[in-house]
Image 1 (spheres, rainbow, N blue to C red):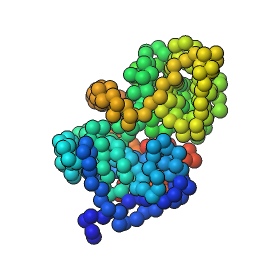
Image 2 (cartoon, rainbow, N blue to C red):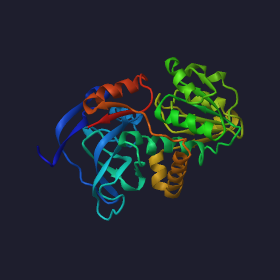
Image 3 (cartoon, one colour):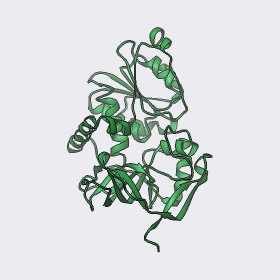
Image 4 (cartoon, one colour):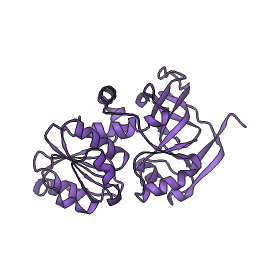
Length: 319
């Protein structure tokens, strides 16, 4: 076997997950400054991966490309000038080409795999848990006694958000597909609604919006003047709000969140999230994940199921 090549899932078009192809002669990537090369032991599947296969993810790669951007594994080589994390460390982070045997990750946004956790159990720390925590705390400013509406609560970020919001003393209203209601209730949600029942929600203090198709309903659900809507995804398509609507219809705070941009542009805020996540682990709030694990060859099927909203919880591919 050629040590300079690897198995990887390559996206060959913008026609969706059906055009993901498993190939075995992809060159092993080389890390640049501020990056590390990781031997991937597990890769996280996210809705952004689906969007990339459709060519709708802002700034996303153009085909053909090696898919995936969330990975956990062992650091095997640093990029020029990169001193941490150390070679041999097991980390979880984001980068490019995660659906492969090796991937390059951004060193500054990696987190160590917690002691006693398997690598796949740590997937979600940087994306799901950090996104949920950022949306609730520094951006959403959640306070005990407030009401939080969590969209797509059965997904990776949604599940983390429900658990965190309850930990911080909020009442949680959640939306999910009918077959996923019990999963969300088990996380601690006080009320679970179908996606189409959004207008049944009274004024809430904070909305975590990731669907897109429910954006208008999220604006209506937020409490006038003090309500906040944190937008961190557009899984159901693009939505818009005008300045006129914000003045005359929805006097709410609308906040955009992309955790990768947050880590790059506000590293001190991201460092605070890392510290708070560590404290949450120590308090037993953040526990090892229980992902659904698939082989790398199953990637096209898993992404198609995620696009069809037929999955529950974190989905993982193992090379």
